[in-house]
Image (cartoon, rainbow, N blue to C red; front, side, top):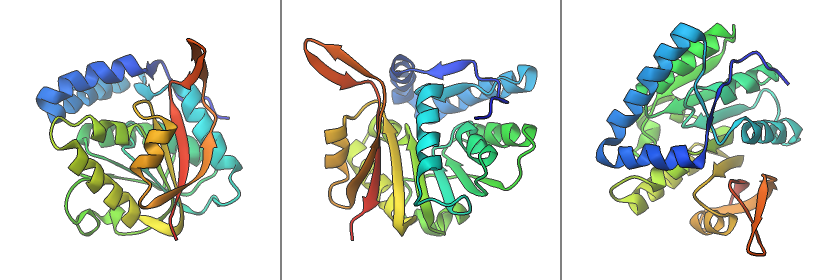
Length: 237
């Protein structure tokens, strides 16, 4: 496991809630402001910024992919809502060669490109993309192909917290994910807003549960739960 990156920030649930309270008044401006700070910080100190759900959760997702016999290192993999691109950098360092990252924020893509370049990694493609736009596959080159694995680490959460039309937004998101997956593709989603049962219900029309990544659990009032849920889906036949 590589430890070349300077990781100092962890993105916790409380940070997510705080961020999206701001985002409800101005979603785009909030993200742009966030990544302006993180780009400046990376330029000054080499700090790559926030790791959504923490480094431990990211490592669990990476390890699952690496241990998955259905995914070859040459298979196309896309990170939808890639943020700073650190997950893709780690995949590249583990030998994966066909990697794509997309994000709604221009600042996120700028930061991801800078971090990837600083690590001496080539061959990772990044593009600013609106996953919810109509006919997204026709608008963006990165979405015009199909992928063996689609990774979401917090993006569906962000879509679900949009201030207007969240149900329509979620439908648009699912439509786009379906359109960029191979028939034998894997959809790897990690969420802090939705339980396992809720995610299964959200995707029940188009996907079937394939596997689950173990995440830290807690016990309260005799009940056991998880702060983060990480599931793998396949498209229905």
